[in-house]
Length: 416
Image (tube, rainbow, N blue to C red; front, side, top):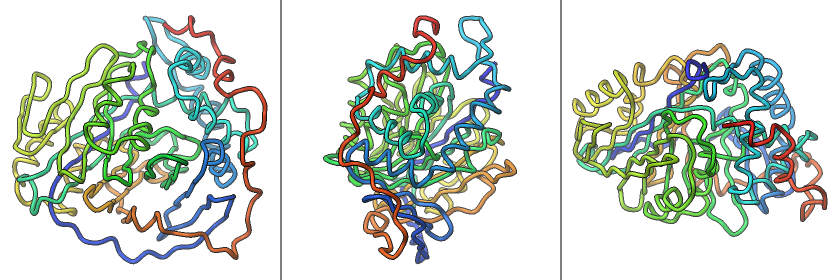
């Protein structure tokens, strides 16, 4: 069953002081229109800017080889090993299952995301259906998370930490990229992601709102907006914590998901259940039936022994956390062996630290962190001497809508 290969996501909100990210060494790799790919201290950072189609095209062109290999491995190699069980039936072709889910959800998803996926496909020279299907993969995965702030930390600075356990055997870490997005008419944001994806599972926007997710059960409840697109909507639409919460409250949702959202302007954060049939918000210092350990200025989301260990760590260090000790909250065994990436946001300032699993599958929690300054990254400009790839057209070429491409797979009725 798929759940045996599922992952956990841990999110942290803590307040305390942190050291500044070291002075960055940058190198522009390639340019495409207003987008460019650079390396910052050896970590790939993708800058995309403009309309949804333009941003997608920039990603597709600048990460073409990574996107092609990522999608190829997911469907041609890993997909052959994967068995999805729905309604008691084992389905041996996950690509068809995911295509069916996409077809079922297409009417609920903003058109701009389909335009961006079409841009990715055009820029990478791929079939748009393959990109659309790949972008719905996160709907099959589920995770966990936590948040702490206020008196729980050293000096009141807000941190939001996130452990993503999607499974290192999917090789997503081979295609890791930090995306700095400046969508036309919307809020700029940073997305900790992988080549070919336009949704988000870990991110922060320029108005100091950060978000991460964790998952539960509920597979098969697909009549809603996919989790990764709801999170993307938060990043580019939410000015405040309340507005971020409203994105989930006001849209139909899928499966069983939990989120940690932080607002660096107020130092507040919440845990939230936003499932297909339930919506609950847990404030810092509160507990409930599923989260019995209420800790002052903290909201802690995880499961089983990982939850107990997370609570123990936060209680033991309450009032002392800074950026370094906050990162250690995400050490194993709170992080699982399948730990794909770990992220600490200092949401108040926009600074952040990212660690990824190795190519050999060693968990991110055991790897060094890369330090970034999001406001500084927004100011980066490409080296004009770097060769430029053909720019995306000012508007998407007239052709079949990628929204209709979502209908090309298994009929929605086949996925219950």
